[in-house]
Image 1 (cartoon, rainbow, N blue to C red):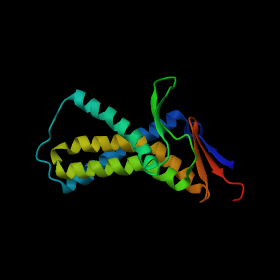
Image 2 (image 1 turned 180 degrees about the horizontal axis):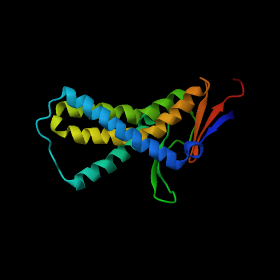
Image 3 (image 1 turned 90 degrees about the horizontal axis):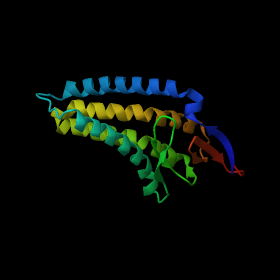
Image 4 (image 1 turned 180 degrees about the vertical axis):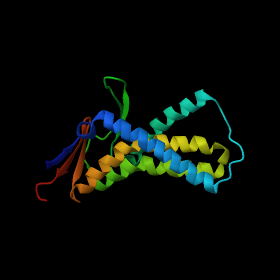
Length: 180
């Protein structure tokens, strides 16, 4: 196998630009998600729990997001582990895959948290309308986190069909076999 393309999203776009795009996308997603669901769901009252449970929910949503990246890989019998990547500012939870995986599995793994948490937030909002603002905020935070994943997937769609993906702490490599 040889490396067809090496991708590092932060290097290509810049950390500041990615952060701005992520936050802006999360806010826009919140507005659309909340307005769309509130037009179909009648919200008579909103339960309030305070700031501590809310911050705990924000921390849990980021942990679940990273954990859900590993689930499709584990279901396929591959090895993936959650590790903490040390950065200059703060540690980041990271799903590390030490072996190569197929392009299809990598796309599934990248989009799985976005789809799963958004579906659960939608179902939760329908069955518990008094928590609609909380579900909307958590879905928006998840969408903001998923911007990185969406950019990764756009690179993966450009890769050849039979390619394999190798994970690295600074990005990923798209590999092709020499026979291809």
